[in-house]
Structures are given as structure tokens and as C-alpha cells.
Amino acid sequence: MELKKIALNDVHESLGAKMVPFAGYNMPVRYSSDLEEHNTVRNGVGIFDVSHMGEFLVKGPEALDLIQRITSNDASKLTPGKIQYSCFPNEDGGIVDDLLVYCMAENEYMLVVNASNIEKDWAWVSKYNTKGAELENISDKMSLFAVQGPKTVEALQSLTSVDLGSMVYYTFEKGEFAGVPDVILSATGYTGSGGFEIYVKNEDAEKVFHAIMEAGKEQGIKPIGLGARDTLRLEMGFCLYGNDINDTTSPLEAGLGWITKFDKEFVNSENLKEQKAAGVSKKLVGFEMLEKAIPRAHYEIVNAEGEQIGEVTSGTMSPSLGKGIGMGYVQTEYSKPGTEVFVRVRNKDMKGQIVKLPFVKK
Image (tube, rainbow, N blue to C red; front, side, top):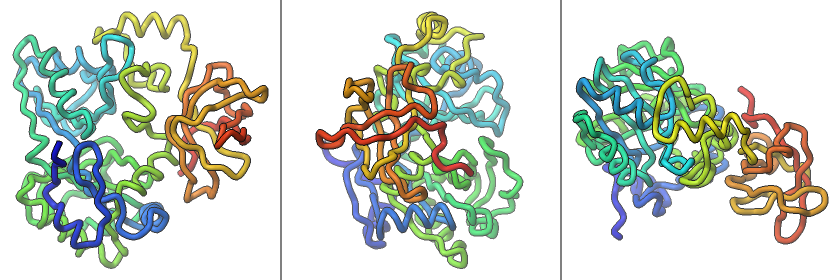
């Protein structure tokens, strides 16, 4: 299958990005080093091009009803300008995808889904659209920049009259940005260092990208690749679809009970309700290494006796903490913070302990 290209593919190549295949797209993984880019976002400001993400519009009098049936969170609580984190539960207890639900206006929503799942999600939403909500897949028409880090407001404020500093987490505004009308500016952040996501049409992407790079010069803005995005999100304990959640992991096992609202009916809600009542047998946890070792996905997690009690789903050397950290599923009795566990690294059991997420406290 031929790799898809995001609108600014050539711009990233000209900036010296190392491009790699990711979720079916040719994507910039790094420009300098993952460590340098990670620290740029934690301490200053960086821009990610995440235009591979998918966007679906859901409109009309049946829009909310459809979203309520296919998502786990309660979208009736949304008002225009608000955003919600949610997931599509599947019929077998797992998760089709995790997503953001934007309330654009009354009876009008935008669903932002993971790049690797665009086709799967579109088929899923369409399958349940039995009452005729208006659906449009605008994924190939949109570009998305995530400008992240503590200096983001200073870097971007000159480009818009929207008061960025007063925007609340999980809200968005539509306004002129870098001379382009109707740009969506949202504050959801996947790095834990604050910042904004900027949704623009592909034809405006290059103009907006260069304007951001120019406006943020004084704050030392740099382009950041997917490598640093992964270490940043992992330090915050945010799930990555395909690693920490997938078609076989239940939202309750994944610690996503907070977005699973049983005061409405949705796909597989009855079974999930029973699971909640019975209690889950495994849980997604964060752990840090107490010995020098880097945990990696699929490494076994074992107890002091060497018996397997779980598996690592994401792991790295934390640039902010200078030690190995990871997430993984363990049997529930081993999920309490402070519990000693071991990660089997090349046949050696290295000591770690369960910790409360996020790893990096703000």
C-alpha cells in the first residue's frame, strides 16, 4: 500500500526531518534528537504536524443521538465550544478507538479519531447511523498542528485576536488565525505541557505553519517529531491506541471508567455495566523502574517469584525523570501504587514499582 502524504510533507523534508511510515502516512519522526525535542516542548514551545489524524463531521437533528449510541461518554453534556474525550466501545468488550468529540454548534459535531483507524472508524460510525444523521469524512481535507509547551501563548498570541491565555482546557474557539478565517483553535494537548491544536484546511496549511514558525522565533519554537510526542504523552500516562488500548481491552480495564457513563445506553453498555459490578481482573497501570533498565512494549511483567502477572504496553527512558517508565496491564491485585513488580528485560528480572499516573506532575 502506498504511503499517504500530509500536505506539508515536502516542508518537513526541507527542514531535515527523518520521515518514517506511521499509520499509513509518511510522517516526521524527528528533526534533531528525540531528547532535545522533548525538552523543547517541556520547557519552551514546539510544533507538531499531526495532520494524519482523522476528522468526521456529524450534523443534523439525529447527530447527538448517533454520538450517544456509539460513544461511552455523555455527549449531551457538551455545549458549543466544548470538547470531550471519549471512546467507541465495540460489541465484544474492547475499544474500536478513542476520540475527541467537538460540539461545533447545536446539532453539529466533529469527531477527531486516530490516523490508523480512520477507515475502521468511518465504517463503524456509518454502520450505526441508522436514523440518517449527516456524515462527512473531512480527514483528507484538513491539516492539524499541535503547538505545545509553556511558551505557546506568547508564541501564538500575535497571530489571533482570540484570547489564548483565557482558554480553558478542553474548549475551543473558531476565529481568524495568521490571516486565515474560521480556524479551529483548541486546548486539549497530548503532551501535558499546555498548548493548542490548530485545525486548518490543507490549502492554508503552509501559510499557517510558516506564520507559527515566524511568530514563535523569539520563544525558540522548533518543529517536533513523533518520537518526542511519544515520550511526552507517556510521561503523562496518556493512552496510545494500538499500544495501551485496542479491540480487546475494555475501557474499565484501561482506567477509562471516567469516560464510561452508564446513565445512557450505548454499544455494549450492558456487558460493561456487568463487568464494572463484577470488578476487572486486570488493570492498566503506570510503573517506574528502580533498576537501570528500559521497559519496552510486550516485555513480561512478573512478580517476585518470577510468575508472569502482566505485560508492558508502552515503555521508554523518561527524559524528564531520567529513569525507565512504562504502562502495562497487570492482574488487579498487583495494581496498587507502591507494589513491587519486575520487568523481564532480556531474561533478567529488573525491579520496578507501580506508581500513580501521571509520571511527571505539573
